[in-house]
Image (tube, rainbow, N blue to C red; front, side, top):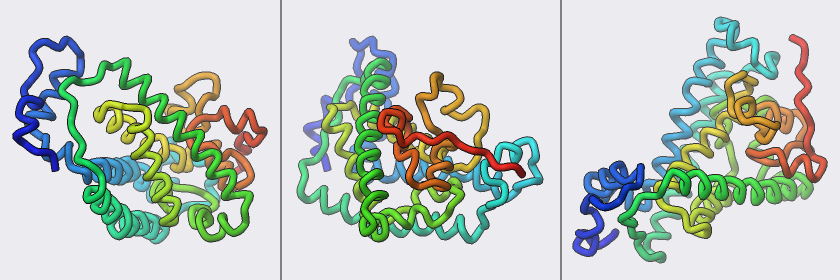
Length: 275
C-alpha cells in the first residue's frame, strides 16, 4: 500500500489546475485514496461492471416474448437462454475471479512496487485518445489470439471452447471463459494502459466502457440504439458480428472493431433467421 505520509501533498485539492476533471480527481484523492489505490480496485470495478451491465439483458431474456417491442430484435429467437444457463455462466465467472484473479493480484502486490496516484487529472481529450488507443491495442491482441485459438484444435479444445458452449450468446456468457483465457485478457487489460502511460482515471473509464462493449456484443439482441448502430461506417461489430461468430466460429474474430476482420477477410455479416 502507498505510504500515506508520502502522499500527504498529493491528496491536497489542486487550486491552480483548470482541467475539467480536476475537481472530481481531487475528490477521489482526498476522500477515497485507500480504495482507488488498492490493487483490488480494478478487479472490483471490472466485475461489478460486468454484473450490473448484464442484469437488464438477463431480465429481458427471462421475459422473452412478454416484451414484444424488444424481443423482436432477438437475433436467434429459437434459442432462448434459461435461468440455469445464466447461473452457470455467472458462477463460472465468480469462481474464476475469486480463486484465480484475486490470488494473482495479491501475489502481484508482493512483487510489484505500490502504485502512486498523480496529482493532476487527465484532460477529457487525454481520456478519449488514450482510451481509444488502449481499445485498439486490445482489439489487435485479441484478434490474433482469437484467430490462433480457433485454428489450432488443441488450443481451441482446452482454452477457448468453453466460451462456445452456447451457440446463442447472452449477457452473462460474456465472461464464460476458461481460466487461461480470463487470465490472458486480464493481463492485457492491466498492462496495456501501463504500456501506453494512461492516467488511472483513463484506465478506469476504459475498463468500464470496454466491459459495456463486451456485454453488448453478447446480449443476443440487435437493438437499434447499441453502439454498432450509433458509431458510423460500420466501425464496430457489436452483437450482430459476435452472434454470427458463435453461429459460424471461423468468422468475426475481433472483439470490438471491424477493421481487422475486413482486412483479413474474416468478416461475415449476420444472416437473420425467420421466426
